[in-house]
Image 1 (cartoon, rainbow, N blue to C red):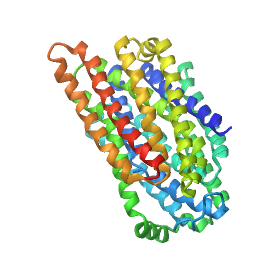
Image 2 (image 1 turned 180 degrees about the horizontal axis):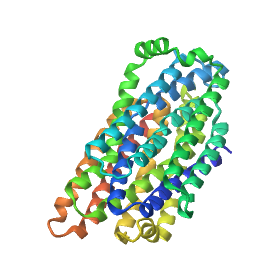
Image 3 (image 1 turned 180 degrees about the vertical axis):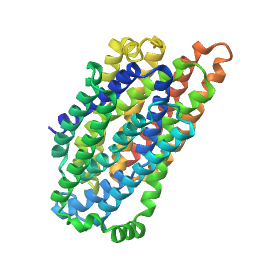
Length: 430
């Protein structure tokens, strides 16, 4: 039931990602839409600037909860977790959202983001950036076995948000739609806070005990936060930097549209994979903390198999409708070739292997090993766009897409091999 609920939310998340492009490309002029894509890229950076704190709090709160409930595998004291940590992390992420909003406003005023719709862009950014707080609520509730309750609440929020977005195509005001989505996401955050307080038994004063919580965080797990922060920044740069690098080295608009489509598919498949793995995490974390490595290895192998199944389903869908979806999504402004489509299908298989490794190791607090596996992926991602344009040569812009996809596929394949080796070591208890 939990996996099905998560997959339903994944479906809405995927629809949302495509619907945003579908609506905004039709509502905004060409120059405004290009500026909007840069805003989306910056928004992705900002949302990922939570520095992996949601993974840290999941790993710590999960261990505390298992010990608190006397669950199997909780033969420990639950670590040194304190509920005041949650309030501190909500404060920190809220401050990040505020700083991001100030940066967007500054970029618009300075002309770095050229738009005649500054209020629309700023409100859209804030509404989307609230996903950081929603993610923290989701991870905290997952750690205390309130997955299904949150997924139900989140499904209703996503469904209403999608309806508000699509209503623009029927004549509803774009500005009004975006403003209502900001209100809707704010209500979702407040609901998450209430659910966390009810489940954990937190008192109201613990939400604002920032000196106590902050001091505890500083004393006990700054090292985890540092490794998680470095890992998150590496992953964010690896996945998002091609937006900016392509804009810097190529004047071919088709190349950035190709990457935007690839990025959307990566996000969609990664989200679907996370939904399936999160359904298995409660059991996998119990087995890991109990030291039952044989059962853990079996569960991990099963998780990889399911993730590969998710990727194969996405590949079949892409083969069937990928070209038409690309043309409809970008209003015929570019064409997706069969070569590019085939390479994207293989890339998604490598992606899901990486996802299983990252999600499981993150839930167990293995941020140091993950960072070592992430740095080569970052380096290759940074090199791919300029190298593709250089290899294509002057006057051969039509070759940019296939060459970039070949290099980007090699980047993911190499990273997947590193993660396979890491998961084998984990399965052996190393």
